[in-house]
Length: 325
Image (cartoon, rainbow, N blue to C red):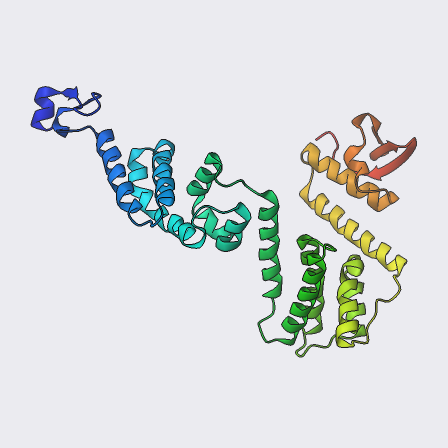
């Protein structure tokens, strides 16, 4: 459907940019209209700033945004980014370091302003900090661990006390934030197990039961046990490691992995390498990475299984599938 003007005159030059446009559009083409609207909205938003520098930043961002998403979308969305720029002005007068922005807004809020963050990185106003990003991720994971217990619970009080002790060690350079999170996780698991039947019962029996179930956490939980003993007078201690029990637990875990792989069935090259890795560890006690790095030329089918040559020694393992599938 065409209006009378478009039908009679067809396309004419835009009075502003000289690009061809439908004659019925009148005084300007669609691109000029949206560019003009974007300019008006940028000028209007800039009056919200008290500092000329921040107004210039916002104006620069607005025209950069136009180049990224087009005049139409830029004009329709420019207002939504104004609160971010105004909060930056209110708190720091100009864009601070990335770590400061991350600490103030958090990862979730910064994700809502991806385009302004990309602009400040492109212009060099803010330099991305991967370490700060990693630390922020660790902080959020620590909050999740602490929030497994409601505030006021005895378990939460114990865990927060341990967290403060860990942070003191981190502040003097003895730990990293990741180490703090890794230490908190088993402590929370032990507290949760100790309070399963109502009322926390954190004693030697509970500790031994936890380590029987997860022997690999012995080193990770040692700091929490020492904290409970030194700060709260708990009569608990790490029992001497039972090497046979650790081996049994490892073997049970490898057996479960083999059964899961058998159910999965023959698949990709990656699947076969996983089978090699687990089977060599289960049947011959080799390290898990052997099956991942052994060369194909050192693999030979024999007696319904596979012979793996490693360090001039042959190891036979069964196959729960056809190796040639």
